[in-house]
Length: 259
Image (tube, rainbow, N blue to C red):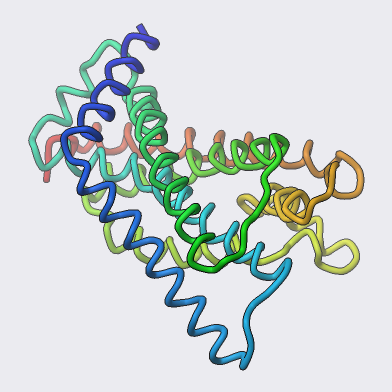
């Protein structure tokens, strides 16, 4: 049943992709132009171009931030849309648990987001003239980061299921996620670097930055990769549990069908 539901969601995303290609093109241009504007502004303020590993960090961080915000917001937007259409209670009565349904929708939306982000990344590298060579290993921290995004997405969905609106919350959250992406927690001195274990995507970004510099293995020991897995599981469990409690509270208050 889960595979059937996932296949249906994937077909839905694919249909929308081909039916509204201008939406994809517009989003790619918007993401790329915003980054290029920031790149030119930063170069002008610094009095010189942003080069080398620093530029690689910025491009990778910005691209991953774009991908993560899509994954985080998908669940909240799905609930808000269902509530606006008056179909949220019907979704709750589906054979699959609502948490599973929204997770499947997020996975399907992620396929669209990967296409969008990949095209934007290529355009950004062309605009900046700085090309990053990726290795298959870099997919590991990216996938772990997306897992964390699903956990945070459940937290956003918890706010939405209770209050039905989370747009402003998402607007604030995107700056918080940008801070997490751009801050090198794993490079902090001494034991302070282990704060990255509990900070969302802290270990994953440390691994990704290391690999982007052309290293062939994970930073230090492979312990950072294991800590990245722990970090992902931690936020998935927190998000899943918090959403379950928020859903039960909304149902007990009879507020599932409210808009």
